[in-house]
Structures are given as C-alpha cells and as structure tokens.
Image 1 (spheres, rainbow, N blue to C red):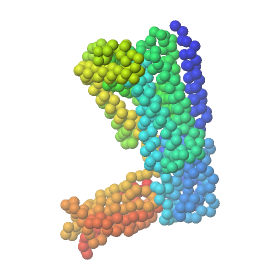
Image 2: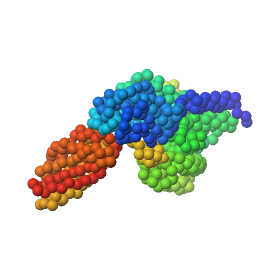
Image 3: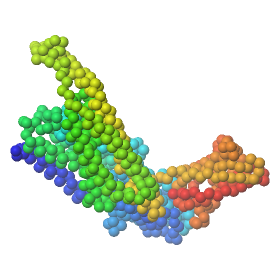
Length: 624
C-alpha cells in the first residue's frame, strides 16, 4: 500500500524543517570549538618583561566566542589598562588579543579572561605578568577571573539533566509504544518526557545569557542578554529544540490517537503505509532533537567534527531507545497492564541493538575526547567521570541480563476483566441509564475495580514481579548514568586538560587550597611535632594561611614563636612574611597574604619551643 498523501506531506515538512535548522546552525552561527582550555599567553604567566607590551595575547586549545569584556587587564590598583574590544588574531578563533594603553607604569598586572566555547559552557581564568619588576597588587586573581554565578550554575545544571531525561523519556516512550506496546501508562511516560524537555529547554534558554556572561539570577529578565544568547550556536540550538518539540507534539497526538493498538502492531484502519510514514516522521523529529545537542556541544568541533556529530546523534538515540523504553516497560508493568511476552521480547531485541550502538559510538567518543591511555583516563577529571559512567553501564547491563532471564520465564495470561461487565450486579451497558451523575460514579467504580484486579493479578505472578523488580533496578541505575552524562558534558575533555597541563598555562578553573604537612624537631624537651599548613586558594593575589601545630601524640600545642615566609627563588622575590596571629590552641592564621605571581614558592616555617630550641623547615608550595 502506498503512503497516504498526508503522511508524505508530514515527512516532507519535517525533513524540510530539519534541513533548515541544520543550515541555520552551520551557516548562521559563528564558528567555535569544543570545551576550550588556555594553552599559552603572551606575556607568559608569571613572567617579568623589560618594557610594556603593546597587547596581551591568549591562545586556547579550541576556538572561543569573544565579548566586549572577554579580556581585561588590570594594573596594581585594579584600574583597567586595556583599550578596545578583544579580537581574534588573524581570524583564528582559538586566539584572543587586546591592546594596552601606551605608557603603562612598571608593576604587576592581572589579566582576567572569560569566553564561551562551542560546547555551550563558559570558561574563565586569570594570570599575572610584571613590567620592569614585580610589585604588590590589590587585585585578587581568583575574584578578577569571575566565573559562573553559583545559583545560575546550579539551576542550569538541573535544567540540563532534566533535558536529557525528558529526551530519553520522549523518544524511548514513543518507540516503545510504536513497536512493543501502547497504553495509558506508556503514553504518560512519552508525554511526561515531552513536558520535561519543553520546560527545561525554556528554562535553559532564559538562563543562557546569565550563564555565559557570569551574571546573577536577577539578570535572567534582561532581554539584551537573551538576544546575545540567541545569536550564539548554543542559543540557536535551544530555540531550534523548541521548534522541533512543536512537531513532536503533533507526532505524539497521532501516535497515541484512537487508532493505536495496545500490542504496538499497526491497526488495520491505519494501514501499513500510514504506520511507515509515522515512523519516518518520528525518526526525523528524534534525530533533529538529538542534533541540538550534537551540533552545539563537544561533538561540534575538535577532532573530526564531520564524523563526531552523527556519531553523537546515534549515541543519544540509542540511549533514548534503551533507557526510555526501559521506563515505559516499567510504567506498563507497574500499572498492572497486561504486557505480553512478545512485547517484552521485542523490547529486549531493541535494547540489545541499542547497547551495540552505544558500545561502538562510546568507544569512538572516548578516543576522541580523552584517548585510550590509562593516564588520560585516571589523570583527568573527564577521564574519571568516564570510568564511573562505564562502571554504571556495566551494572546496568548486569541488571538487563537478569531482566532477560525473567522474560524467558514469562507466560502470557488473559487480560483482566474488570469485575467488569457488572458493578454491584448491574449490567455495564445499562448501569446509570438516564442519570449521567450515577453513570459517572459507576464508571469510576468499574475503573477502580479493574485497576485493583490488574494489580492483584500482577502481584500474584512471580515471574512478572521478578521482571518488574529487575527493570526497576535498571531504571534506578539509568538515572545515575544520565546524571554522570550531564556532568561529563560540563567537564573539560581529557585531551584539552592534558594539553593545558603540558603547556603550563594557568587553568581555567580556580585552584583548590594547597596543603603541606611538615614534621619538625627543635631538639629540646617536647620539641617534636607536626605542622599542617594550608594556603587558600593558592592563587596569585590575596590568600589565607592557616598553621596548626600538633605534638607527638597528635594534640594541638602552643609554642613561644612561630613564623612563616614564602620565597619565589627563581624570580628572586621574597621572602614575603605572613603575619600569623594565634586563633586558638595550636592554631595560627594570616589573612590577606598576597603573592604577586604564579610559581613554585618555597615555604619556610620556623618553630621555636624554648629560648634556645628552634628549627626552620622548608617545603615547596605551588601557587597558580
């Protein structure tokens, strides 16, 4: 039978829409690359130059999008000395340069930068250089670098997780309904996914400007920020996702219309041609939705983007068919619907094929983002999250194996008949005749009795109960997999992190506190102990130094005198002495201890336990 004209028109419309969206993403948005990392600076981080440079230049591992304030240069008093907007050097998107005012004075300058990479995540950082000779500076590099507002970051992360979950439920629920079994429980899964994806995408679009610009929640209503967000590839992808969801709503209305059969087979009145047209249209919409992630995140640039984007689309679709179908199967089993063995086996075959696609595409993505070396997997944050995801998928596969065993033991049973034709001895066809209120009451009673009967039969079937429990376990692990996936998409890829470490450029993210433990022995009575020193945040600018002294038994101990200083031996800066003040027994602290540049600093700690017993210990501390 030929596909009806309406179905052909629907497929043609969806194909044209998707082609237009793809053209918009590739031609209408500026080029940018995957999660960028700063790999080089000119002047170099922590360097001392003889004369003032004409400009400051930054080089990233990938391309970045620049704004008017993407690069700021601050003098020791915190005044800006840059002029004009930052620009790409020679049109190369992985570079940024800003001119400096003529005649700037000697001293230490702080360069704060913030940009947006193509994976939709802002990156920021700061470094220092000195003209003539280093000097004290009132600028704290950690605060100058700015970054994402914590509240905006939290809500944006929740929105991204909800978007992934909504996509999985929408696509997986629709595929399960079309191939395996359709019911109200399955319909609720697919429609719930559509709602979650629509709401989360709307929230992400509203937050996008504040997220990329380092603004607070109060700026969400700023229309200029929203306009700036829509002019970028991530913003265009979010808007395109909303447009595709309007087509998905039409698809769901047809799929769960009156012609849908519960066993997933095409109804006779629908016709095989209409079913194929519906399937083709749904595939186009699902692929388009997946492409809104692939064309605006890690896959959009870097190594082999022409291959990485379709691979990412296939990866997302396979995950949705497996995990979303799992949710639909769980909903059907939990509701007490009669799920035939043939329907479960059809889903099992789909899930097996999806796992194969996930394995192949996942291996490619692992190689592309992190490489296959053990150090790239264990020595980078991205690699560690990737290993955790692999472990969770292994647990998921083990649970799926148990589900397959329970599926093999299923026996089809007749659908429960709602205590059904009669309620309280009244024939269903004539119950409440002439009284619409009474008829509605009886209908609700019949539905409640049917539901109770379905649950009773469900709980009485040991094999179906076992299958339900194993599918529930799979679904719980699947939620964890989606959470780790969300974190992965917001983490700097392992290749970029490794390249940044090799280059020695300052990291985009704020460093954590530096901690050292120093054993000392003054030689006198009770002269042995341990000093625990913490420098927070271990960055150029203001730091807080905490020193805790413990005696040989591990208890806090006071001493008559304690001094601490730090020296940058290679740069011949220092010693800079920390003004330690006693806070409590065995605890000293110095606030606003300023370090002018990033380097490996030599920490000298002098402990005096009596008038004649004293010792000085030295350790190295890395300051970023």
